[in-house]
Image 1: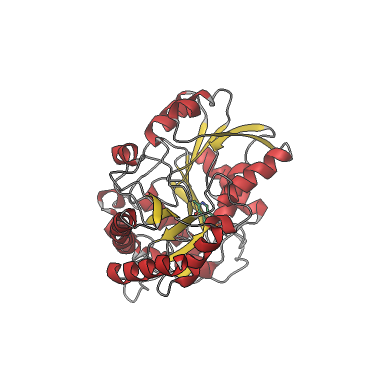
Image 2 (image 1 turned 90 degrees about the vertical axis):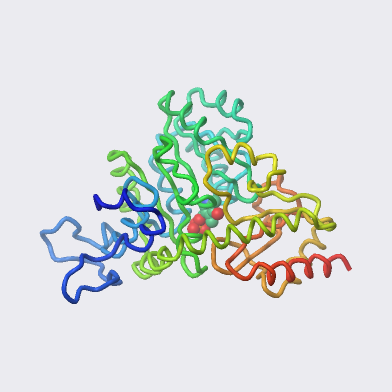
Length: 374
Ligand SMILES: *Cc1c(COP(=O)(O)O)cnc(C)c1O
């Protein structure tokens, strides 16, 4: 969109991209465009086909991820748009552990014979490659939610593309700040904008970005005719969130590394999953292509499901809640959701580390762990 932007760094892009054109008395921020229809004769025509507030957000996400972006009413709406463009019976290779919404959708579409999902252990690169034969789509999520498994993105994308297989990457946990799947050769990058990009737990939105004009057209049509359009107010809030996204993400990531280290030393924690810890089994693989490790830490509490629930209920600063990527720290026992993969331990807590003071967070977490044990 803006030929100057590739020269800028993400911290600057996040603040400058998607602004209205500058002129005397021009507005700094795009308007919240509340219009279901437009006067005839232009390229948009109707409110389900386009909206200037969406466009401003899409320009900003494109500047961060590369490619051209479409925004959707949620991350799941964006994911559904991708699957809706596949031919009937398409073979989809995906991780056997990932975001529960995607796992559920893949299972439902497979049961209905709309697609044919093949689940693989995503950390086993050779196993993923050998499952690629005859695949139409490789769906990757890395790090995975909530196990923080790492897919070897450069290798898997290259292998899939050499077989002409479509590759889509859910970049929600890593974000464009630490990995850019389109630059690695992926066809589509998906973001749950609800998380880090919007960043304040007040918006549900999703996005897809692609370099391929045919793919863009298919995904744009999917949005138009599935009707999974974002609300202008949500788009505006998400763009406002993006202005501080690099600052928030950096701070939260620093906090996360420190909390992961302290949890590793804690007598009531049996395992910590954070790819930034040198002791994490995924660390070397992650370090080879990621510029950072993000701000989600999952850990196993030394107790049963009920005791683990008590940990989450006992905190005062960290809120017991699902979702992630906001300024505020949240945690939950993932298996409280019946749809979560059975491979996720009953005592696993997913902690979305926010931007609070790290010592305040640690005191709260330590006290909650001790309170639950009593
Ligand atoms: C939350 C999430 C989604 C779904 O996004 P919504 O905006 O909640 O629809 C998809 N993938 C990952 C990794 C997520 O964390």
